[in-house]
Length: 88
Image 1 (cartoon, rainbow, N blue to C red):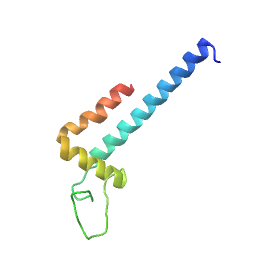
Image 2 (cartoon, helix red, strand yellow):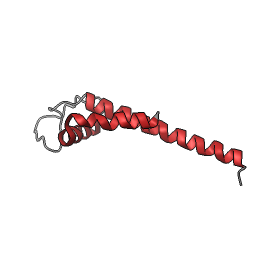
Image 3 (spheres, rainbow, N blue to C red):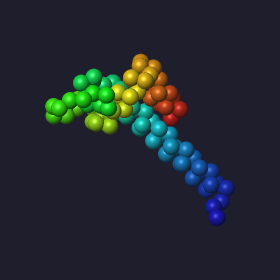
């Protein structure tokens, strides 16, 4: 059983780890949205050509950015910005 000081230390490190993970996800989302290209393959873009992905985050970034921008438009930037503020 941990002492009270140890419990506080562990709890703070857990919160720090979660904040770091949220900041990393926010940066990933921001990069995916910033490098969005309508020519990237996505669920609503069919093409028989070789998949040439220009999104910095690869195929998963292209799909995520496409979904966010098609559903939320420019407001999609609010998601990573809010996550970044929460992480801070």
